[in-house]
Structures are given as C-alpha cells and as structure tokens.
Image (cartoon, rainbow, N blue to C red):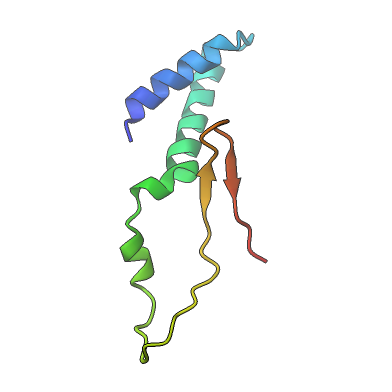
Length: 88
C-alpha cells in the first residue's frame, strides 16, 4: 500500500467536507483514518493466506477438512464501506 498517496487522498477527502476543524484536528483525523484503513480494513491484502493456513495440523487422512472461524474484514467496492464477519 502506498501510505503517502493514501494520506494525500484522505486530506483531500476531509477538505472536501468543508468541516470547521483546526489543522491539528485534521492531521489527527488523517492519522487515524490512514491507520484504520491500512492496519485493519485493508490489512488482508498484505497477508499471505498460505502462511495463515499452514499453522493447521496436517491431516492424517484424505478426507475433506473443514476449517471454520476464519475472521475477515473487507471493503464494499461500490460504497467503500467496511463489512466483517463476527463469530460467536
């Protein structure tokens, strides 16, 4: 991910809302949003799925294996809103 480009886009997005906030508040908002998007909402794009799944114990038979409770967070490509799966 290009953090610099993301921050520039977030700054423009915040400016486009024409909020009456200080420069410090605006910078803090950019920091928080950049961290949220890169470390949470889009973090899966930087993860290797084989590494995550290789921690499972090898099967001792040729039967199908059922893996459950794999948490995920993603972004709706039409609205850029997050969605996620919550497990009980």
